[in-house]
Length: 151
Image 1 (cartoon, helix red, strand yellow):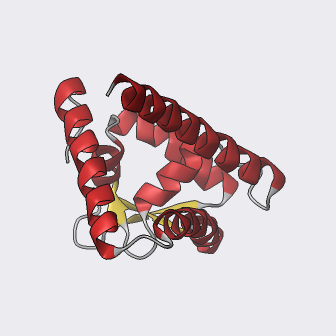
Image 2: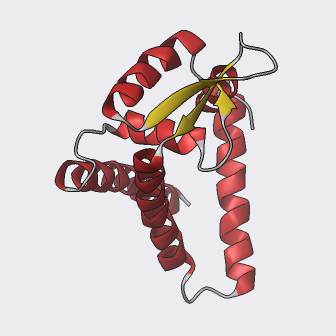
């Protein structure tokens, strides 16, 4: 069993590092080379369709509203995000993606979709369920052990 633990640990570390490198390289060499990994993940959290409040997005990212405010200011300046006040309650500000932000979201989402499709390609449904169960177990452990955000 020790060998399996070593192999799994090595694979998880390599996969994590590879994904970060690929995302960073794609951003640097692509159309959206003015975005950081953190900014593209902020764009991902804002989502494609509905405007969201700063509190909602901050909670999803497990950061403070103050930290998010700084990030949103940069994304507004770069043209990826816009702020809008709610007509019913002018105190509430929603953020949403601009056309440019939506394009960045779609390209980033395609990378993730392609990666996952490749991972499950050729796996029987039973093996896919086993993989999902294993990843859910790992996710639950990390959240519980390290008190990370919400499920």
